[in-house]
Length: 275
Ligand SMILES: [Cu+2]
Image 1 (tube, rainbow, N blue to C red):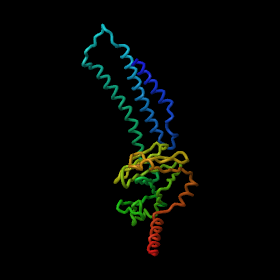
Image 2 (spheres, rainbow, N blue to C red; image 1 turned 90 degrees about the vertical axis):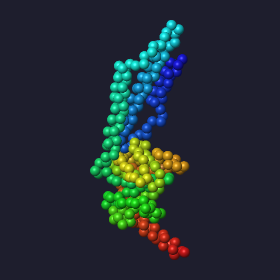
Image 3 (cartoon, rainbow, N blue to C red; image 1 turned 45 degrees about the vertical axis):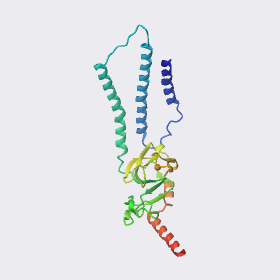
Image 4 (cartoon, rainbow, N blue to C red; image 1 turned 180 degrees about the vertical axis):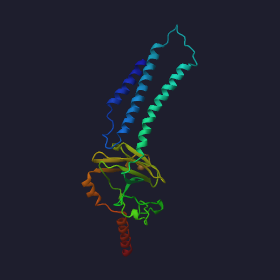
């Protein structure tokens, strides 16, 4: 009976894995290597799982209780221990090595990757793009205020043309690599777009980064993948991957840091006049 139950667990697990309706969304970035690593992990751990359970079934049937049988006491078996140690070592290396290779690639952006900044806070996403100079201006958390939500350094000329997107969609160019710089101004968050197969934590006081190339036009949902408070589940956003012409059309309508500050100034003048 137990042997049959175990057999049922083995078959059920394999069939469920193969027919599962919760499989990956179609990939939309260059990170096929991440999928390959996950597949390899499934293959290795799945094979070990099946073999161990089949071995258990075999033992349960073969060595089941019989009155004339006595158990044998065998506290040590050097040969068996050696075999198991070598096999486990090979298995662990096979699980770790491919991941380390992909990781090395993941945190080494190509020269032409466009820097973009993703800023997380409870519970929304903001983005900063370089202006025409292609450089993001420097920031300091002490500069953060309602007029300067990213804490940009007002004296840094590189920051004046930076494009600020607050609570708005992020647009990216298809087939152009981006280097994603991640910041948080409160707690841990995690920038995750399932179709890009890429995610990383945002750590307060640090800038973390990775790169990817969007390979498919369309709209992709951003999910925060690090529990960050009661509003964690609503911390969502949208990445729109555009072709050249729609990207240019969109970016021409966005405001720069300079425009942001001017607007804030005239707003506060209005209030002053009214008072
Ligand atoms: Cu979050």
